[in-house]
Length: 259
Length: 259
DNA sequence: CGTTGAATTGACACCGTTCAACGACAGTGG
DNA sequence: CCACTGTCGTTGAACGGTGTCAATTCAACG
Image: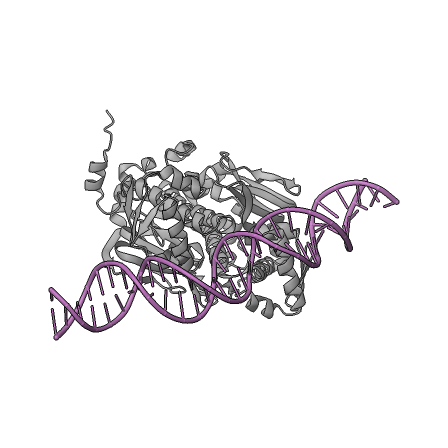
């Protein structure tokens, strides 16, 4: 008889990595693979707000999984700083560094967070002996790429208020996938300035955009806390279609990857 | 005595795939791996301008390498269409489809082009038996992600004319890496409308931006042909720093990946 | 030589930036 | 308990970049 693994059990068995690919292809991992993932983590380290984990150009010997909190990837172009992606618990934040060796961007803590370090030598072993797990790791980095593409589309087509709405919808969705965030409220360490960096607008205009969302009753963001009565409306306003996040409840075709 | 492989020889030995990772980590591939890559290609197929190779959401059983010509990835958000990336010969265009199974975007021919199809079953074999080559394939998809990030930064920070300049500089650089494009002129199948889609502006404003570049003597783009006297100036204007393209002449640290 | 898609131009409205000032709040130390 | 301080958030007015609409020119091609 196949015992169905409940959320509780997963948390107990894999306290550090149970959120990895949760809501996406985690169901494609067999217990052995989940155990390998958990054992990959060496040191667990806390980060304080704004702390830079990896600097652009540095050669990295390890990658890290985000266990608690939020992180950003940031790049500088023509002097100004901007955020090109956001990470939530369960994300293998800079797995990219494994194949790229040096990164093209900084990886920064947004608020307090906790990460688990994975030595690249361990990943070498996985590549040698675990083709299926390798493919899942690869998949997780392509998920990032898919999100990047959506952000590009968002920046190309939406205007300020819609961009924030889109980000809000995305964060909410991603938090839910890893069992975080409630139905009507989520807590984040984000400031209006950081949101502005992610949306490619000034923080002043971000303030006005948030004002608009508030006035129109679409969403209320105050000092990191996001609240909304009607998420459907928020998503619609931000032209948010979650299919790029490759969640399980999507088209379901990924079952082919299951094994 | 180690025989140095000249460009000529590479072309003869691997007529379909000699451009793959050229200028990046191709030097890290041993002849056996290059041969495997070449043999991965099944059918070779021409595409006509605007032809859609893979449609968003479709389940793909194969991926394709771009042998000649240009291709785009496009997504639709709130009705309008926009281009989220551009590909040049040597790019393993929709390798993403291998791990993702279904894509979040369309893959479209820009102008006439020629592609080589690779069955996913063949890639499965590579994953099982060739960890080093697997890592290089993974690397090539992460290169796309790095370019995505740069585009996000570009959209967040630069204004119209600088955005085009940046794209121009990028295309030029990438073409040079695969032995295409001369010092002062490159030919592309791009229209002002497509450039506009890539820069997130209207084609009308793209026209004005191109006019500005022309007036200021930075670059002259006319019906697909791009000309400039001073590439350094073009790059400076577009705040272009090629390090995100991970070219060989970069920091050189990637040699660690060599083996 | 006519047709067609692409490129070009001008007028005007709107979105977002800039600069400057002010208000709200949390943490700190007296 | 209060005053102090710094960060974050808020607001207004002027300016500039970009979108929109409509009309015109240009280049390629059958």
